[in-house]
Amino acid sequence: MPISTDARVAEVWDRLASVTDPELDESVTELRFVTAVEVDADSRVHIGFRLPTYWCSPNFAFLMADDMRAAAGSLPWVRQVLIDLRDHMYSDTINQGLAQGHSFKATFAEEAAEEDLDDLRRTFRIKAYQRRQEAVIRHLMERGWTPAAILALDCPHLATLAIDDPETDRQRTRYLEIRAEYGGPTDAAFTSAEGEAINPETFADYLTLLRRVRINTEFNGSLCRGLLQARYGDDEPASAPDGEPTLADFIAGRVDARNERRNHSCRK
Amino acid sequence: MYRTADGEEIFIIDGHTHLWDGSKENLKNIHGQQFIDCFYGYHSALSPKEYVWPKEKFDKYGAETMYNDLFVEGYDDMAIFQPTYLKDFYVNGFNTTEQNAVLKEKYPDRFILNGAWDPRDGEVGLEALRELASKYQLKGVKLYTAEWHGSSKGYKLSDDWAQRYLEESQKLGIKNIHVHKGPTILPLNRDAFDVADIDEAATNFPELNFIVEHCGLPRLDDFCWIAVQEPNVYGGLAVALPFIHSRPDYFNQIISELLFWLGPDRLLYGSDYAIWSPKWMIEKFMAHELPDNIKKDKGVDLNLDAKRKILGLNAARLYDIDVPAQAAKLSGSAPVKEGEQTMAQVAEVLGDD
Image (cartoon, chains in turn cyan, orange):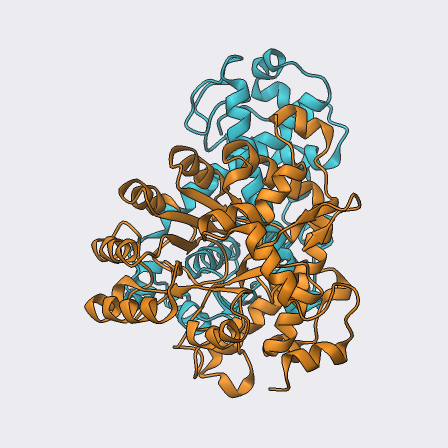
């Protein structure tokens, strides 16, 4: 049975919610960077994309757009994903490069781009790992956990721990997701991104490092939200997701999966 | 001059100001439009509501408005002009040393005029720097390492040509190198926030002072790391300071990191006028106290002594300003006493141009 266009649009929104701004480590839909999702009769997906300024780094813009293309493209019925980045210095270059399936380097060959995006992606995934980890550790410390008790936690226990603060709960889930990519193969819940063990003697220094990562990220986050607001006001995206499971989720059988995310070890 | 409730006088040097022309008439292209629009975004995102200007005023506010906002309303005693040429975007440039010089000539005791250079201009640029330095007796320059230049999308202070310009600066008595390491100027294949090149330059030129504008935010950690090792590295607080209004807890975190790593002797106040206005920021900064838990955890304090240094004494040291003498000179030449002036009087003093 073919699914309706509305359901398909909802499916795309759901996939896009998993795409993050690498610097801010927040979802591009939550940040209001995605303005519209349309699905045409040929099963092509059109995604409207905007950023807080005309000057936002093209490498990050490209990276997010590329991730959106991959996320939407992972739906089995999607034939093509077309990104429409608007009001950016490189709107045309980026939109065309993506439509032709080019890499960042190839897209910006005339601008003498030296980098490919893999290193950049990795650098910011590590920062995201640190930031999510810090949010969880800080919460545990506020609840009176000792460094030794925190460092003794393993991933399965962290996954099932009762956490009374919704934001920390959210960051715990996100941390465990990224913990499967970084932090090494041990079962310890908290290791450095490179997989080194943290011990009670080095814990304070390690926290200092994490705190600075958070300060930087918050700076970006606060500024970007403010600039987007100043640039576009309260314009809401065409069909903002409400976070509840949609019809598409039930059809795709994802609702149960959502509730099972807690079932974690450190490695997938 | 700011006076505390106890009658203490705080001499204020605004380390970061601009007199720009972002008006329609001066636009060269869409980039110029988007540049001033982006500045306006910063202005309206972080200013208190009552201090947000209409866009037209923000595009081009003029010399009188600037003088009034800084020195009459705004508690500044002196201000440093940091130029931003952007000749590719604006017909006459956005905010050039030459434009700023007009106000400097009118109020020589109020303004410190900084220049600019770009190592990608090669020998020609060195010659132009010599002329600029001798014409205006420059003691400082403002650099944008991420600025575009032909096919180049930025440079590093550790590049050979940059080292030659630093040598020349030292010879010419330009000892304060303000480097923009922060948001807004487009980075592409260079990381605009990367502060690592400051490290090498500061080591090679111990007699020069490197003032990292915007503290390398959002790479505060890298900046602090470098600043700890290099005693001639300073932090300019422009862009960090306005958070004192919208997110004071967050400001506490930034300033306490900076106080911990650099201490109160190496931080410089800057309003980044006209993005933000000194009046509200200084009032809030003077009224601001760090919470006890931060004071205790980090062992730092933002007391009156620290505020005095950040607001003026540090910049006075870098720019050879004798504060008591300068204050006396300014009080003798001040157009009107604080709190007593009317707009008509100000207009009369400033003339009608």
